[in-house]
Image 1 (cartoon, rainbow, N blue to C red):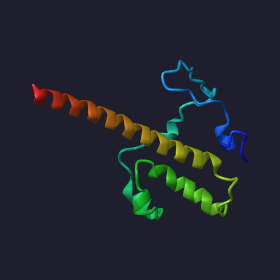
Image 2 (image 1 turned 135 degrees about the vertical axis):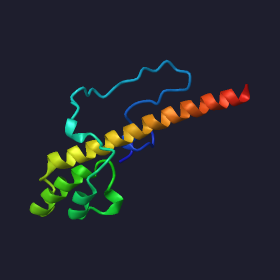
Image 3 (image 1 turned 30 degrees about the vertical axis):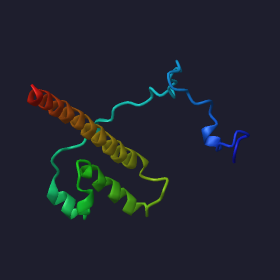
Image 4 (image 1 turned 60 degrees about the vertical axis):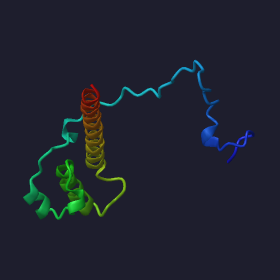
Length: 122
């Protein structure tokens, strides 16, 4: 469970780059992901269909439209862990895309606030 250096195995992938070192960044490959148009967050939802599907209020976000078919599939398959994979992946991808949209919105707000702060200083 531990290496000879005393660090856990998950930390033993190699030496950590030192500050001001010219360490190169390695990427983990990838390039296999294709954008899924089904996984697009929607700013507005059909509240009646969410209510009919008994989606809890806490889950009625920009990806709730994908939770309806996912929960339907879960109920018909008795929550089998190896079923509904496509629906679950699409829902989780939508959540990720929604997170990225919020991050980008925060960056834009920060830029505007920084510009206003600079104007106030002048």
